Length: 259
Image (cartoon, rainbow, N blue to C red; front, side, top):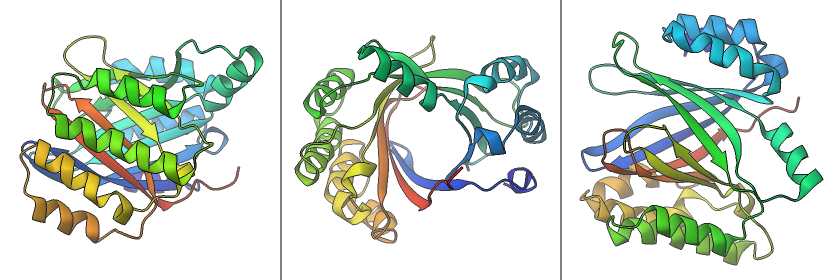
């Protein structure tokens, strides 16, 4: 993350644990900047230093003016890390939804993923917000999206949303779905910060997900218990680019600084 640190801008940070059939991926880091603190030229400079394929520069450059947040993610893997750059259009989307009260899907994040040193491994993902969903409606979409998969993976996600509903019964939760346009990738992401749940609170659901993915209970408990006091941010689950199922648990390390 040295390239990001050299930008000199203050950022918030989330870490995450990803569960997939081949094991548990730790060390995943996501840092976010207010777009005013990460202007377009700085963002592109960081992307170049992180070896983003140059074909994506124009896409990010064109979209930066609309963005309210710029994010970078790092996921360590055997054979080399994968890197992500995202633009988030939260202020624009919120303004449109408040003005129209429309439930029409809207692009909230634009994401580029690549693997430095592997020019064939890259892609662009749209993260589409479904605004004004009730928690029950979000659970319905999650269940339909996960249809055909192991029911324990479905139960882990919907059970956690149910827990959040009981904690804050009058709140709604931001719900997204991600698609690459080609290939099997399809997943959801639901933001549960409002519930102020901890990873410790979520551990039983994580164990259920792990069992649905064929992972050992003890290994998942050991990883998540070490962060049990951290605030659970959001969860995502579905099918990855490679076609396998996954579930990811994001937790807050450092909140986004006030702009």
